[in-house]
Length: 128
Image (cartoon, rainbow, N blue to C red):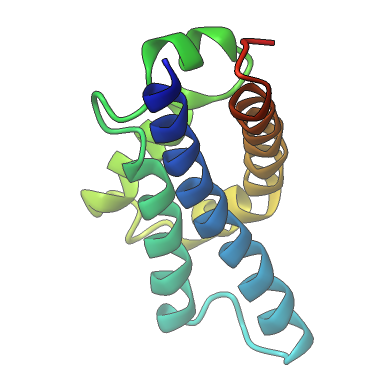
């Protein structure tokens, strides 16, 4: 089980890294006066969001972890990745900005909780 927990932690950390980048970029861009409607800005933010969702590809995260944290929006994050990656969002910049502002902070909070749990399990060697 340790290997699966280590693998899960690795994927969660990748997701968190991508989502925290979005948060950091958003703060920097806003403080520098950049428009979030800029195509280059939106492309970068969408890419980071899609990469976070990519970690939810079939078989990457254990079923046990997803079941243990049923309150985490796993399916929604995965669908969002598909929505972005298949270019359905290309004409919906306002929807992407809304997701980034409203949902990304929630995803970060949820994944930080999962990360703390996995770190605890790996340190203690027992499921919490």
